[in-house]
Amino acid sequence: MNLGQTIVLTQSDVRSLVDMADAVPAIEAGFAAHGRGDTQMPVKVFIDLPDYFGDFRAMPAYLDGSVGVKWVNMHARNPEIHGLPSVLGMYILSDPSTALPLALMDATLLTAFRTGAAAGVGAKHLARADARTLGIIGCGVQAPMILAAIQVAVGDLEIVAADASTAVAEAFVAEHGGRVGSAEDAAGCDILCTATPVREPIVRREWVRPGTHINAIGADTHGKQELESRILVDAKVVVDDLDQASGGGEVNVPLHEGAIQREGIHATLGEVVAGLKPGRESAEEITVFDSTGLAVQDLALARVIYERAKERGAGREVAFFD
Image (cartoon, rainbow, N blue to C red):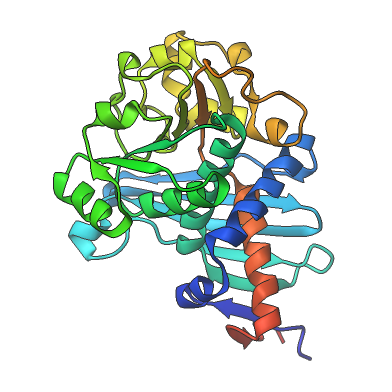
């Protein structure tokens, strides 16, 4: 007896089925649902593997009649040791009524899309309406996704790109436009996006002007920090999820040091998107969105990809159970 077909979608399939114009509204809706409390999202499960220079994370979620889980890694030395990407993820989207797997898809590209889209949503709801310049610190594989999302959510801005490797920044500018600058130059922009793996702050408080919005994206585990703690002390801080960010987001070090308190964190982005709490309230305030990456974001986008695959007959159908 055939119990049903599962659509298997490779990275090429995913690339052909979704773009940032699809991702931004899907992620925005996922944030709003999370802000209203209409989701289930257990805390990420980590398996730390220092002997292999990496870790694995399981990220399950339920959202509006859909359920799924992402199995994803971070092996920072993969490119130099094995010639493989640092992140290699898979996503299983299931039918909540029967538990049958609806789709098995690449989650490496999915993760890149939803991470970039979150930055776009953060800027849409927290940046000044008259923002004209965008600074990007960290011009690696995530930077083009961040830029694409900002362009969808906010519009075209003048770009200042900075990276520890001048060659990487130059390559980014050659492909996407703008100019290469220092981290200080990028931090002086109306919108700043940081996407680096650093554990010591690379953005100083004195570089950040009144009215700046910052998407802090790089800190995703305990001990990572891209912004000087004084920035968060002086800013309106919005997180994607308070528990998750407290353990491994941009706020984790300032919280541990006592520079800020959990009670002083203004809101989750979902609460802002859902209209439950205000976003930016003046042209002068500094806003920070601490983006750690939520399982509901993955699910929201995986659902879009699956529905598009069904419409177009993409992927390969497999009967896993009989």
